[in-house]
Length: 549
Image (tube, rainbow, N blue to C red):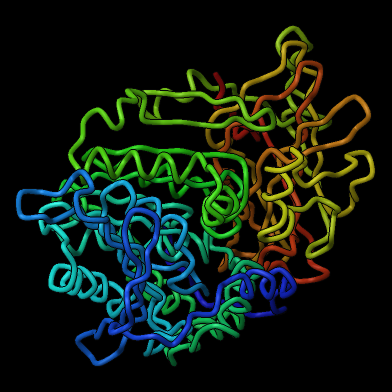
């Protein structure tokens, strides 16, 4: 990722605080009970609350689930495989009670803990920093000393913050044999600043969830302030890089940790492109699952104790690589995709096999190159310029953090626009001819165009829509890209990859590409009143590249 250069801040985040408060209040209050509390019967085993002291004196609140004596999978010494579960952002150790019970009944010792800085755990929120990573090994050490846990069979599973910590734990502690990262991140810098664009709405939601449940460290408070104020972005990137599993991938590979990653196509915080990029670079046992939804929405019913495909897959992964049971997970195709909008499941041997070819459409003066069988874009169409008003709403939108992906998951309705009503003074809109047989998009579409601006800095957000005969457009994918330090009036090329997806365009529908300069999800850099010109020429044609099956 390119390093940012400081740019002038013009507006603060559009916060979705209502959603934040709902999620922040979803955690269950933890009784103030210490390690000496009597064990309670939980299914076939027992449950107790515990206090785990960290090396710096901070006390982590934890739950301990222990299998009943005689439960299968104990070694000759009576020791069971261990699973460590860090709680997710803003939640506490009681979050995983249902899953802890299930794992204990299947022969695991389970230790779930509240990450430092949240709820009853001491210290300040470290956001997967060095203190949080050290706490993982502390919890493992404590479990080996205070439970019948087997030091040779250790795994981790976590959701959201816990999912990111599982990957960081895999890099830091070679005792960990397998991890299941659920709605976790691979690259925190990408989460906050992909396309050199500040993801302000997502950051505001995370801050809103943290406020009533955790205590910010001065460092975290400073980073948030800098992000919102568009200040010292190189410092923000350095902070986020240090918390990114992608920067420690060589250590994960060296440890040979088995890694399962399960994420959502519409994750507001951790877009699927960073997940697929990370997955491809893993060299040990690995599995990738992507489903429609938003952040942590696919896993939620599993927290309630209901049957859940993602949690079931995580348990099978642990059975295979922590218990060492080869019969537990015999799936030979490690990449599983639930395709939008139908939810049809596909399996592939690797990410490279997800798409079989690419289609390169010319972005012409009046439309995209026609679908097969239609008229071609002529030479005159390749040379065009379209100017839009900077920082002006067009009607196109990436949606709302935490909500849009959830709606897509539950009712198959992504962010929707009426394409003929989009504000043409504020956006470039280009449409293809209908695809009579439909089109199977698999991967990250890419836009190439030429940009000229009256200001040295700016932002473009590209949207790809599935459009029906009535002009109703459903969002397939989008992504932002910002720039700074450009000479006003001087054209420059812009390449913009959209977030990866798997989407089946229905027969008879067509595609619409929209290029705008403002979206409430992001901290845009385009000055209000400036003019941004998108263009194409015969020497450097504007194109839309589509990975398809």
